[in-house]
Image 1 (tube, rainbow, N blue to C red):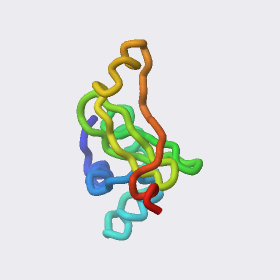
Image 2: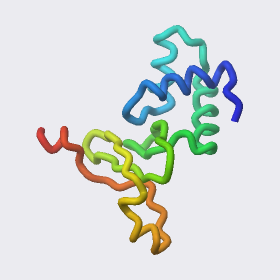
Image 3: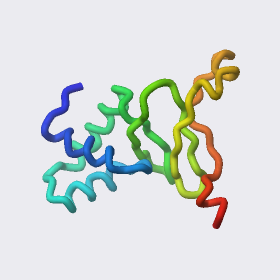
Image 4: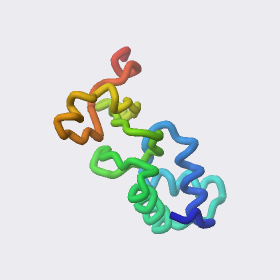
Length: 116
């Protein structure tokens, strides 16, 4: 995947975000910074980044949200309450993976939401 001028702002935005963001949220953030990137470009860029394995797409309240993935085999632990995401090394799940499972997401509750 080539990092074109219109794709770079989307990638930079994702690098600054800890939580998954929707295309609309990313577009609004870029526009607020003065970037002249169209919403269609944001959607296309996110799709290309997901196909390349650079971001992971999460289902969040009926829409897709995206987050940059860490390197190596891992799965995502997603908070059901707030949508926070943490990555877990695949080695922690070796037994399940050895049985042929491909784990992408595990859902639970993050420490912040547990305190509330």
